[in-house]
Length: 108
Image 1 (cartoon, rainbow, N blue to C red):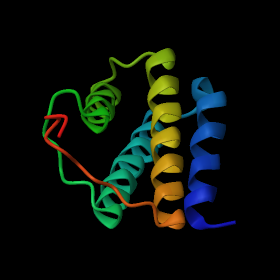
Image 2: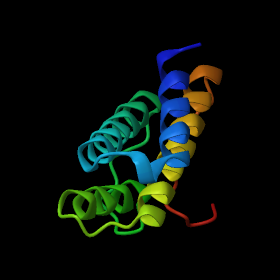
Image 3: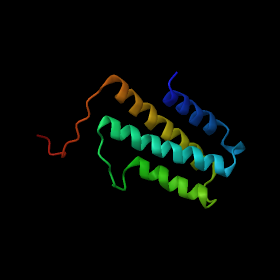
């Protein structure tokens, strides 16, 4: 199993026991997930997106709430599972050599 697959499994396991995790563990996992997503996006050719609609931004917002102690267990669980899904999907794209084309949405 690859290290990416291992990390996805770790995120899912953590989401299943989120109430037992220390705050620093939650933050560490989510920060690592955001870095992994960024790195995989670069590898597959997805440009950096600073849009508010970017799911990675939502993960960073959850990370900030974890750090300031305002994130509840449901929010942390959701963020960990969302991160696991994004990493899994990007890993599949990378490993299958799927070509990513980002268009302007003009329908041409």
